[in-house]
Image 1: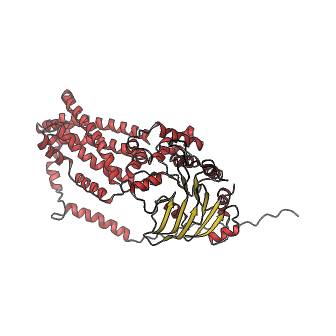
Image 2: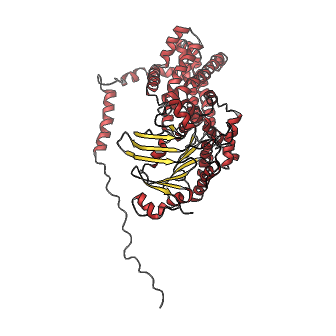
Image 3: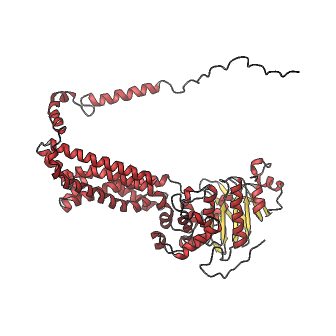
Length: 275
Length: 276
């Protein structure tokens, strides 16, 4: 099910009104300074508004893959295009502008623990506000409204003035999702967003990501290592093994056989989250 | 058929025996070598610092008189100590405030996690190493010559002394802190300085205030010494009463500093509890 897209949304409209971005990788190689090849010739085309689950064991390169899309990990060769913009060539101001359009969610939530929930969500506005406003902490009413709207969307509005560190893990990840939403992103990248959460909370957070994709039409890429979550929440499944794409197809159709192929071993009980 | 009890364990559990301690006898040998070495360094003439225990026996009576005087504080001297004591406190507070304002950005520039620019970071650290290497009394002497006798050179000397300490401790605290929120801010398209302001500053504040309260205490102690070279505060008075051998008056001054330091410590530990 794909969401309606409104490409001509005026500035300052609620999160997600901007047109979503497609993603394109061509022969991407990432070799770290220590010689480890994380991505070994990856080419992918992801359409705007897709919900993609990227699956692989730890060390398969899925974390590197997602980080090449916003330039957190530089590519050794090949090209990465996000929304038609060349990430690999972007530097400085252009790269920051690009990152401002792409939200990111992390396994460890990555919030400023002593800052309030609202302050953390307003970090999502850094690329969209003038520097002096960030440095003085003088946010515009419009930015604060965007942050409040994002918090409301993940059901955390009543916690706006709490310190982030005082929240539970699931609540912190929701705040992190709100921070990404406050960017009014055209794509959201999530790197193992539920790996630190218990099963019910994990399903809640995955459902939030699915709503972002369905209701707002934003392109979402989620790194997962649990096959049932990938099947349930992804519409497309990309399997990585040793830095190469070994599966690319429908998530619902992916059998256990497919996962055994991606993992390079038989399925074990800890490969599923359960409920 | 009736239930059959499981067989009793045949033998009681053998007593647990610790495996042999891996370290050999060399620890003891090294320990004694260190003790003997330090003793030799202290006592053998021409080898170390030449502690002359004979001198202690010969002249301890001179000091004993002073100790007796110190035990009898001259309470009548109190009114004359009030103004210098207040000046010392003012110097300490002003120096701490100025040092805090200067140290906050410098700490962010000096830490690897908040300043990826190796050159700028190296420059800030190099300057601060020099600042820290110079003793505060030397700053005070030079500044008294430059800006004249009074509280101002004292405050400036304290600021330099404080900045060296605070930036060192706070930047180390920053480097030890989790960098996840910084990564998230950069991923959202922020510049390093904006990310520092938005996510690093809120998280670093408790540690920063703790260090500032610590240097406030240090400042009260230090500013009473700085007066010896003419840099204001209690030190001027200490120098005066000492040169007249008024150890009873000196005793009162020491008591007052002690009280101030104790009060500050109580206040700062109360504030720190609220910060955490």
